[in-house]
Image 1 (tube, rainbow, N blue to C red):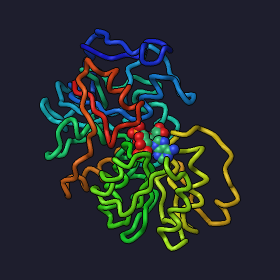
Image 2 (image 1 turned 90 degrees about the vertical axis):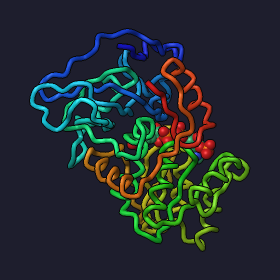
Image 3 (image 1 turned 45 degrees about the vertical axis):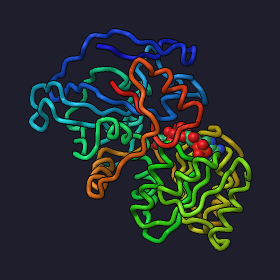
Image 4 (image 1 turned 180 degrees about the vertical axis):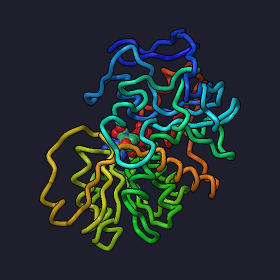
Length: 336
Ligand SMILES: NC(=O)c1ccc[n+]([C@@H]2O[C@H](COP(=O)([O-])OP(=O)(O)OC[C@H]3O[C@@H](n4cnc5c(N)ncnc54)[C@H](OP(=O)(O)O)[C@@H]3O)[C@@H](O)[C@H]2O)c1
């Protein structure tokens, strides 16, 4: 089978197409013919080895994929060839509490990911692709969408009428905007680009602020909320944005700490977290059960993921470069 591998530590130059033996499904396993893979910022960090993210090489990148069942191993009554499936980010985290073991098995991290024609997975970890979604659309869901769902609907306990702040227009933030609107929340958004502002408004953001022309977006958020702050922040920036998020959230509000786009450590105003009674919640994607609940809602309302662009497998490098440029809005997909 064809696969893309990270073969060394020379960034995108290390990304190579290789031929590997096609895997065979063992007992309890399913062989998946992958049809689409979507990119997350983490995949880009893995290939470039930036912000301290490294893993063993050679290794197949990309956590998120969807495809069809090509064959099943012994003792797999629930899937048959041709079924359309999507693979959770941490296939072993079915439900219940998160653990180090689940994290160590996140696809495309310490273990091989899905930028390849075939993969075997435990049958019980897979989920069906909703009928209204293409393989490309389904491939956008395992990491970014489940993270946004967990941040807002599971850990955040979002209620109708609350106000959510989303940062930027990447995969997690655009899903967070969509889920917040579905829940009946008001959304404020910040972006680097006036052009992207219009698209955020089309998706339902009530007000949008350009953080490049005016970096004091925390003051803007307060001005939009009568000086009180928002109920929830979907925090994808990390080190350099967290203090502003702390200032922009209300007393007793919730910050879902998700991203590292501006760095992995920094000086944080810890006193403001306790003074304001903020719930600062580290999120690492979510379980298969959360994914299943999210899929049910996506299916119920026929929600469409926002795909920025789709690349062919032969152009995988260009897809990663596009993600690195930060010009995208929503998700970038590679078709297999
Ligand atoms: N903890 C988890 O479970 C989890 C899961 C998924 C992702 N993540 C992390 O979350 C972050 C986002 O991931 P992603 O895949 O959604 O990334 P992405 O699609 O590459 O999104 C990047 C976008 O973020 C915005 N951005 C960049 N710097 C910003 C800043 N200083 N302030 C506000 N917005 C900024 C930009 O949008 P504009 O051009 O509109 O400004 C940029 O296009 C990454 O750090 C990723 O590692 C964590």
